[in-house]
Image (cartoon, rainbow, N blue to C red; front, side, top):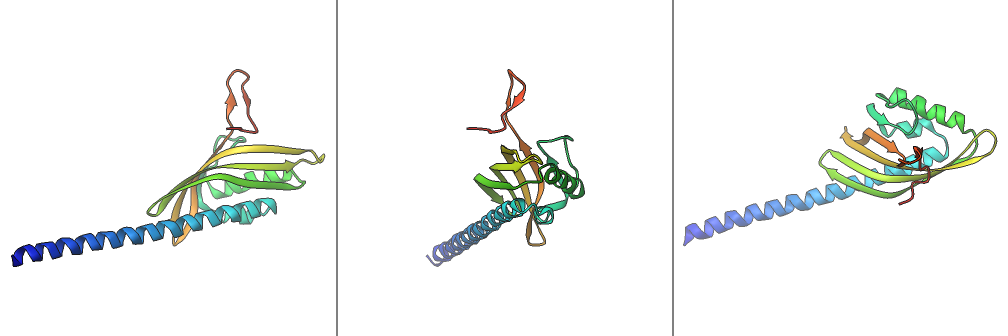
Amino acid sequence: MKRHICVAAIVLCIVASLAGAGTARAQANSSDKAAIEANYRKFADAFDKKDVNGIMMLFAPDVFVYDVIPPRQYTSADAYRKDWEDTFAAFPGPVTTNVTDLNITVAGSVAYTRYVIDGTMTDKDGKAERLVVRSTDVWRKINGKWLIVQEHNSFPVDLTTGQADLLSKP
């Protein structure tokens, strides 16, 4: 009888321990998701201000990016920084962005997100261009800070015309 009670007590301790670990993981997951959501708000704010430094604070130095404009890929934060600088130079007027449909999955020190960026950029002639971009990011928690280590931005393409759908409607 005592042996059954001891075994039962051990099993209850293990179950309680696992439940506590699950609760701790859920709380960490929730705070990690909140931190990543806050990073997207920082991105939108920096974008609207054309603050390249603010945007680049979200990326790891060795980030890999597929962007919507050539070249096909950027293999470092320095290369991607130049992409942002060139983009804002080409659109010197007001810009706005809105991150929608954000979905975040956290798995330990790695997270992945998918979202839509609906933005407007104004060229040198004052013409506003609206673009809706699909994006996917891979995040890694480095020294307690979530940074993007891989990003993929795209537009759907109409295969009959070969033209990008710049408004990317669902």
